[in-house]
Length: 173
Image (cartoon, rainbow, N blue to C red; front, top):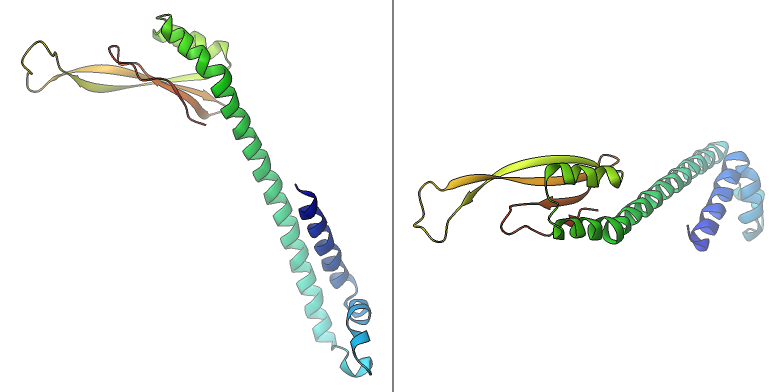
């Protein structure tokens, strides 16, 4: 969290706590000096109670905002680290394996195990056309595997192998 944000939250927290604990002291310290006869304009007990409630609401809001910010920051850092790992480690290693012709299901499983990933394979039927023959209708369909590499239940890398024109692997984080 940036320095200015921390200071702002601390100042708001101090004022919220002060308003909850002793709203009368808050009035006399911050507002009473503005009046010639401050006792004549002193807030009622109901106004002090309302100040206590608003101070409590402010503290709850500040604590909630701080927790939200901390968890969001941690998630963003985790996602950035996963993306960096995918781009700098996993993607080059998978491209090297593909270039070497190691594209079988068992090879993909060994790649996943080697890098601490889990592998999920889906298959889709894709129509094929032989350019040297007249197209048959309906066209023949071939099962094309898509490899989904996951880490901690989150998909980080996919690759579809259609044999003739494989798509390049891509990071999903």
